[in-house]
Image (tube, rainbow, N blue to C red):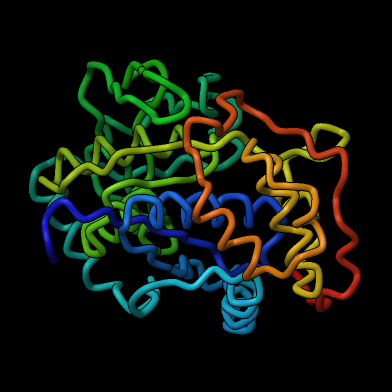
Length: 312
């Protein structure tokens, strides 16, 4: 692929339909790519077969289309690339950077230390002499610091031992972990900037460490403030955020553009998705995106015309 061409991406997990928080990320990543004259790619993170459903993938594609967010190139489906992830895992193993871990969830809850991005593993299994028949595999992080300049959050730094800790790259059920799969994907798609929510800052530190160890290019990172409801809860599938109503696509886009401080004219509020996205493409200003960690949405659209999904 040509050098110095911007390539962004949106990577939803098909465990349910998109919600307004998902749309905020998709829209910002799309506009970043279009403003740079680059490509906007789609990836479906479906390695977790328990959570992922083909019908949710179809719904996500239809939701993006309804909101006039059109991707370039064929979407990358993670479940089609397991051999690539296995190869990266083997590369780390041969470098002596992995070790098995038999810690249960209960033990992890007891022994992990609090960190800026979540619990930090204690390192209990670092000294295991024998390889158990059933275990997860962790990356042995070297001491030192990880630092990068985030487009919206500024300079971010973590101590690898105190703030990050050894993390899982292969689960006990044999599924390659999110962090390892993600860095393989970013390299394969030639991603130059990752735009996503601030709740994934911890993942960015882990992925940068993996990229360095695997000799992979490191994209730039831009972490958006999280969209929260009137009660301060993050909009997420776990918190039962309402699925996007495609019939309200223009309204959804107007709300997201307002949350991103792009100040769309009030007369656009009743316009179609195509009109909203075209206005946003012509007027996108990344410098206006709020730098704070959370965005409170005091007005959420009624999503009652969205399909109902059975869930786990």
